Every structure is written in structure tokens, then in C-alpha cells.
Image (cartoon, rainbow, N blue to C red; front, side):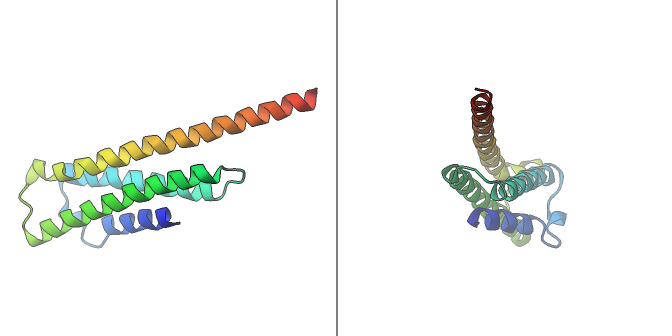
Length: 138
């Protein structure tokens, strides 16, 4: 559940009181993108923990990928918040979001990997069910 904790921590960091007021324009959109992906990860983690017959190795792999991405995102978002509050963020206006773009890229790449893992698992389940159905008919 380290992945779930990391995702919840990231969401809490983003949604801290007064934090949304620090971000404007492209930066706010970028943070919203990070939040949306974190919420997707939260849903995936909640759904995979409730499924039976799921390959534990695949679940652990997915959880680790999510944990790493969420921790990285939280570190960068916290640094950005700190820089803005202290007034040491040297990027302003439309450039301010550029520090967050690598986070979005990592989160998106992780999301794609998670989707592939989930789809692969679902395909495996469909194949198993079709084999069982054929055996029943025979």
C-alpha cells in the first residue's frame, strides 16, 4: 500500500489550503494534469486491490511504478511551491510550468505502462474464460 499512500500524499500536497492560489495559467493546468493522473492512479489501486485472481507479481510491479511516479511528482510540486512562496522561482508567467513538464511526462508514461499491464491482465482473463468455456462444451 506504499503506492496508495504516495498517491494520497501527492493529492494532499496539491490540494493544500491556499496552494491552488499560487498557480496560474499554464502552471495551474499542469498541476491539474498531475492531479488527474494521480486520481486515475488512486482508482487503479483501489480497483486492483479488490480483484481476485490477479497476478500478485503484476500488481506489485504496477504499484511500484505508481509509487515512484507519485513520489517524484510530489517532490517536484513541493519544490515548486517552496520556490514560489520564497520568491526564488526564477521562472515566471508562461515559463513557470516548464519545471513541472518532466513530472507530467513521467506520470503519463507511468499511466501508459499501467494501462498496458491492466489490459494484458484483462486479455489473460478473457483467454482463460474462453478456454474454460470450450472445456465445458467438450
